Structure formats: C-alpha cells, structure tokens
Image 1 (cartoon, rainbow, N blue to C red):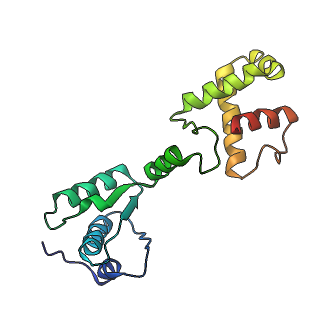
Image 2 (cartoon, one colour):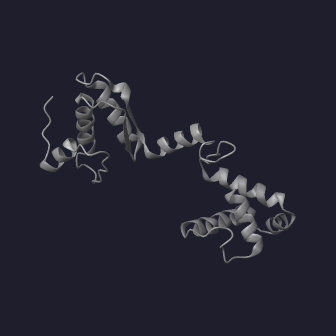
Length: 177
C-alpha cells in the first residue's frame, strides 16, 4: 500500500539517528507516520526490538491493529505497542525490586481506594481518629485532606517540607508511604 506523506511526515519516517519524539495535534497523521516508521525499521537490515508508546489506549489499539493487519510486515513480534502508562506500570510490576522497592507497589485505581487508605491512616492514629470522629461529615473531611495532599504534591512539597501542622505532616507522610 502506497501512503502519501507530507515532507515533514516523511522526514520522521526516514529518521535514523535513534529515538524520536513526535508531538503533533489530533488528526495530524501521527498514527499513520508511526506505523510507516515501524514498517521501515522492520524492513531494514538493522532489525531490533521496537517500543512504540502513545498516550491513549485508542491510539495504541489502532497501531496494534494496523501492524497486525499489514501483510508486508513479517516480524511483528519484535514490536511492543502500548500507552506510556501501561508500559510504566508493567516495568514497575515486573522490576519493582530492581527499582529499590521491597514489595510490589500498590496502584490505586480510583478515588475510593485513596479515601479508604486515608481513613485507615486516621484510624491508626488516636489523635487523627479523634479529629475525624469530630467531623460533621467525615467523608467530606477526608476528601478535603486528599485535596490538600494533592495540592502539596503538585507543588513538589514533601511531608517534611510542608508548612502545615505536625499532625498533617505525619498523616501526609503515612499517606505518601
């Protein structure tokens, strides 16, 4: 199949000096360009493993589908396509010990997981438990605490560096751990 590419797109496909980061907006032909680049690499004599990362599951599935459906591609087993998030999660889960973790890290999928963890932290500490039990709406209070923790993290403020109370720092440190 002959694919018409713009000059810039063809430069991306033909690039041979190593890794390449392609940033472009929606509908600009990123997927088509990446597929053509993968095909070119697979057909070259310098065969190796290819890692293609994208941001969305939709784009990753589209790329996998196009690679699988292309009859001119002989060795699609050397191609790994996925999202940045799934790739990083896979690395963490398979190599957590090499990354310095003693146990496999727990990945919190949703807000209720984070709320439960914070609630457990409050109930493990008598002072924090008393504060939580005095709240008119404990659920709302936990959400507010999570919001403050999130704000601190966005500013790259560690529990030790926080300008908030010692009790907050202790709770934040436990949450962070």
